[in-house]
Image (cartoon, rainbow, N blue to C red; front, top):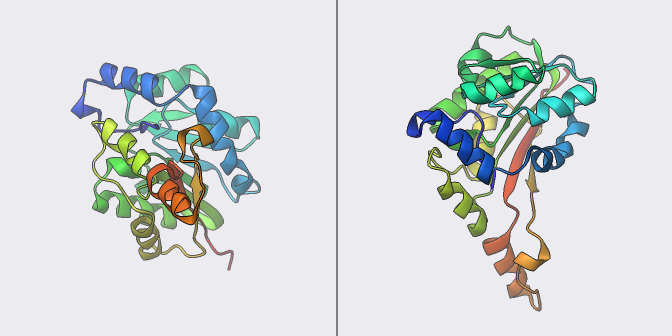
Length: 227
């Protein structure tokens, strides 16, 4: 289960939500291991990476190891201070407002991992529109959220009290297109181990596995045209 970084912690005291994340989100090493998947998309960028809701800074650390410049914005003061203490460039605040203040075409990538399920649709669209404006030609957008097509993943959605609404892949893809992105791809991620899935002895078993025990997350990835 991936609790979001940058959530509306007014639902819970910030210290309590930090403990919630520590218990349910997974260790920093586990999160970083999953996020390594995205690194190949972010090499040779035309500018720095903007990490919206960067949480404990796992992805910022990965980018630093790759020599990729990046900064993050995090709503939780506890998490933001933890990141800064580790030498990461992180500001406490609202990611959408911070992105709106960035110059047009100044970024190489905008990423948001497990964030949009905490926002109403209007805020998600504003975020995507600002991402499109601030990305330079050749820039990359990555938005990861919970896979609504998997019933087991939806259990994780309802576990987090700061979640607003699930975002199906078709809806997020549409909002990205409406914000001006093209060349979209959807990647389904975080598959469950075989021990937590049905033994597939028929085509119907395979269908049930996809519905009940499918990948826990998905990501929409898009690149801004260079011309």
